[in-house]
Amino acid sequence: MTDSDGDRRLLVVGLDAGCLPVLQPLFEAGEIPTLCRLFDRGASGPLESQIPPWTASAWPSIYTGKNPGKHGVYDFLTFDGYDWDVVNATHVRERPVWELLSDHGITSVVVNVPVTHPPREFDGALIPGMTAPEEPECHPEGLLEEVNAACGGYRVYPQSGPEPEHSIEGYERTIELRGEAFRYLLERFSPQFGFVQFQQTDSVFHERPGDEEAVEAVYRAVDRELEATLEAFEPENVLVVSDHGIGPVEGHELRVNELFREAGYLEAKSGGEGMPTWSRAWENDLVEGEDAGEHEPSALERAMEAAAKVGITTQRVAAALDLVGLKEPIGRRVPNDVIRAAAEQVDFPESKAYVRSKSELGVRINLEGREPDGQVSPEEYDAFRAELIETLSAVRTPDGEPFFEDVAPRERYFEGPELEAAPDVVTVPAAFDNAIVAELAGERFGEPVEPWNHKRTGVVAATGSDVNEDATLTGATIFDVAPTICSLFGVPIDAAMDGDPLPLVEPSERRAYPSYEPGRTVATDDAVVEDRLSDLGYL
Image 1: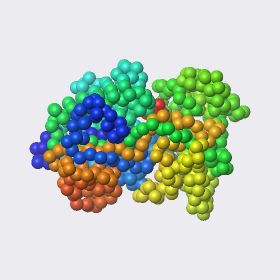
Image 2 (image 1 turned 135 degrees about the vertical axis):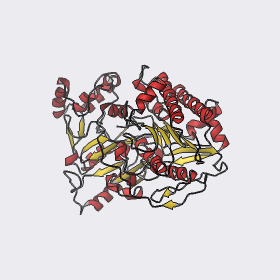
Image 3 (image 1 turned 90 degrees about the vertical axis):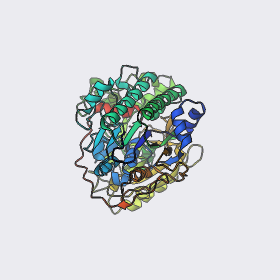
Image 4 (image 1 turned 30 degrees about the horizontal axis):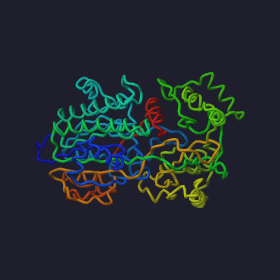
């Protein structure tokens, strides 16, 4: 990273799900000395995420400085009527900070930041992160082939390597290749701004919950790559940020769609119809190698569909298997498509309200004129939404405690031109120690499927010659990251950004920029990406 034009230099390190409850024990044990030095030397504190505090929505909020009501990504999924697709960079309708810096003559290298595929042109280089395919299009064209040749390979996802799936060795090698690729690109492009994100600090908790050895190995690997990068390039300033925190989920799981069926708001179907294909009756092996949208049902799937139509659903089979201890071993050998064919599912067109995706953290109303087969008229909308809010606010756990800490109209959390894409009602589980799911499973409550999941509070730390290392970072949010980056470079802040520069730097002036022209959205259409997100429990 050079400073040939006199501009300040900045390295941003993204730790997905990084938070003090995870980091502090590792600091005290001496497992991650490089990160520990950064936190000790500079200013640090909690970094509040958004609602929903999930990777696919939160990282665009970090790199645009704007809430989902402006950038348009609320979830891992995007919806068109009752159809869905995995989000990608074309769904982000606001300007990434590296494009803004490019407009001011500042070169950037960006590696593994989620929801950045396909990349747009800017001054620098970009290898996309999560929601990209395994061999993604990069910027500039041909970059991935160059990195593979120079670094001995590159991976977006660990299981693409020769190591066993979800193995510590796979995590370590993925992180090592990420660091090597990032350093190669820093040398190759000599940027003033570098941004590298490590996803395994999150996925290890989803794939190996409670495995302290795996968590320590992941963080040690990240620390080694960070140390090598700092030694090789000596950036003037370093900013560590996370998109959210993570921790155990020890409360209850609420199947909101089951609650809505009981209340008469929702209709169900069986036989492979209704709720789209991210519904899972239990954890199972993934069907590999299928092209999205090209799957032909097998004889077993057709048989399961027929059985479901006469009431023999996977939910009922699972309950019976569970009684004899066979649900998990048998479920792990049944392909997703067979399970979906036999599951009882939401009939979207015939329902008035439903949870489309648990990662939205909200409820969608089937509104006339907006949804293809709307059941609620515009005249009924406000009263019906208020009824839903009242119904959900009254939910108590089996222990008698409020299930939600907030149930609110979407306008309380989002504002902007993409508001219509938001769920109509936002649900915030109490302390994120409870969880909602979209499945129909016969019972309103259950044990949380994910024993570890996201919390709202992440972390931020900064050190360097242009940073006020004595600053107090009270009240910092993820929306403050992009304005802080702009201010460190002396670049005017987009007046439409929702955050403010952290007191680490002198704030730049605010300026209204020309409207961003993101271009048309394109489909992700990649079954491997969908399977990967399902495997992590996001879909």
